[in-house]
Image (cartoon, rainbow, N blue to C red; front, side):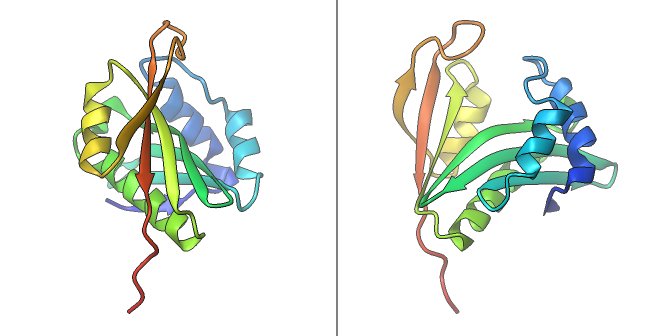
Length: 151
């Protein structure tokens, strides 16, 4: 599953993928462009298949903490490993930047995402009540990131 760092040229594609999500479009093209212009603390990744871009991850890395802000894979490309590849790439990039722990929020009803994250070593550490527009709670997950191994 190829994953690459996104560029400002990818902002329209990321916004299009976001708009196809079940919850509607939270990240507009302008918001994605601002994220891409943030510099070293921003992490914007794009997952690709033979048919073109199929998903993205938006995150941050500030001091020794990383945070996943959004992961989205096109409905037609789900269950093919793209979400896992995006998460793995984020962890690798954070480790390269010296991040020692990462966080994310996931909707309490999104059991598929919760299963993916927990299989990758993310563990629940808290809850944000009524975090989402629909009134649902967010489960806060944390993952410790060991320093990358040196060969």
